[in-house]
Length: 180
Ligand code: PRP
Ligand code: MN
Ligand code: MG
Image 1 (cartoon, protein in one colour):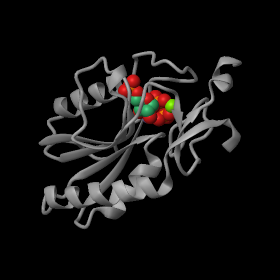
Image 2 (cartoon, helix red, strand yellow; image 1 turned 135 degrees about the vertical axis):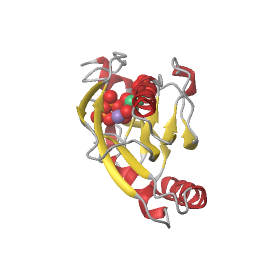
Image 3 (tube, protein in one colour; image 1 turned 90 degrees about the horizontal axis):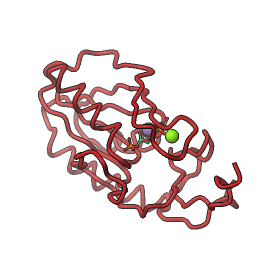
């Protein structure tokens, strides 16, 4: 598995450090607000676990499973809700946790959905952002790192369902996806 990686961009330690920093900001910004922290499955599962453990105030957590890519390396632009929230979004201060913002289409759909459901506020927290690929006018409120326009995997990010368990973010060797 590690041999499929061309270059490690962010180590476990880098991610741990940035999660702590973002956690401090979220703790200050959401004290006494009882925010609803939403993990966008599947990619955000590891970052979500890191972030919520760094927030030192009351939060409620929930999960949504949406998918836009399927098995492709290029976004289809269509976001399917596979699993919805278990609790109402109305009146809540929502923090959406993502692993990466690429075109921004996934988050654009989610932000619109929560506004339609009358959330009190909606903010975005993402481990990675790939600004070069942005199509939708969506920017994160809390962001870990910027990544170049390359196929990145690991720490939740997959290629065909694989590599999510890599404890770092790295660039996938082009021959892995070119030959498939
Ligand atoms: C990936 C990633 C983000 C989204 C970003 O999810 O985890 O959720 O795409 O792309 P966008 O900004 O172009 O919309 P994916 O649809 O691959 O599902 P997954 O998290 O289950 O891998
Ligand atoms: Mn995702
Ligand atoms: Mg994916």
